[in-house]
Image (cartoon, rainbow, N blue to C red; front, side):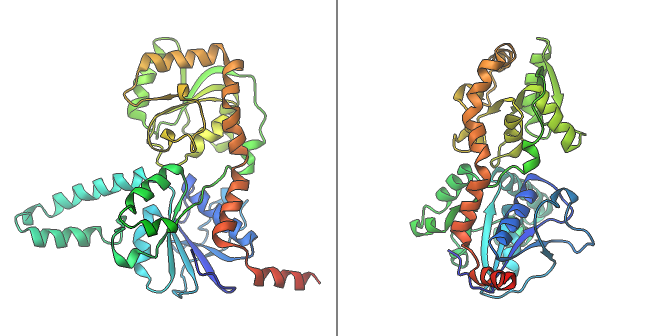
Length: 357
């Protein structure tokens, strides 16, 4: 666990001017830490005039472009920026595993680049290994067995990530005490729009598993099913479309507990997913198994399920009540997780009381 003092500063590393599910989670964490009176900051990777996306104005955050490398302070980095922790010697360190699959993909991509760049020296194994290591250093690799990483704390956004981390630290069971659950939640605006009159529309995100999804679309369109891609729209337009559609499908990797399936469920969509990544864990996507399909893709069975959701929508949407209840408690759960891991800064709390008097 962290050694937090009254003047500890907590930095959470983030890409500047970039709005994704991961960067929103980072702003949510800093917001919640500040609500608990901690000196918490978004640590942006690029110095620019307006690094915070406007869409995150709802979060109470402050930001910095440099950090104090002091043992009383804390640096938290998302798994895609693991190399950042190697730049500092004294600060307490943590990795927030918002994704798992994306790291594995990056390792594969970097491995291919290394093979091409250093192909001429492959016949000298020792030298090739050194070159490959330098090429990868500071990017996305993390050696769980390295003694210098023993005190790095791991924060898991999903049960899928927690399972991955437990497997990685199996060789040293004592390390399991350094794995903590730290999820995220949907912001308030997702709960404001009313559900509209439902239409027989299937929504999908073309950036998530499109190679598989397009096979379903091709098969389904022959059956007269209408598919709409959630792309080129404002958040408000996506919200309205979800509010009037009956089905949302997602056959992507589910590298973490993704936001879009949760958004669709809150808007009254039946959610159908492929059994990949976090979707394979009930704790991450709390829906019945009949709405989860193997990625071997029984296209006929999937289309039949979609048709059933169309024809018996009022009956089937009740299957998602548990999922929606869990989503509605995500913010409270997140608060409790942050409180458990970081506690409340008593000094700042006392200062606020004195100022109020």
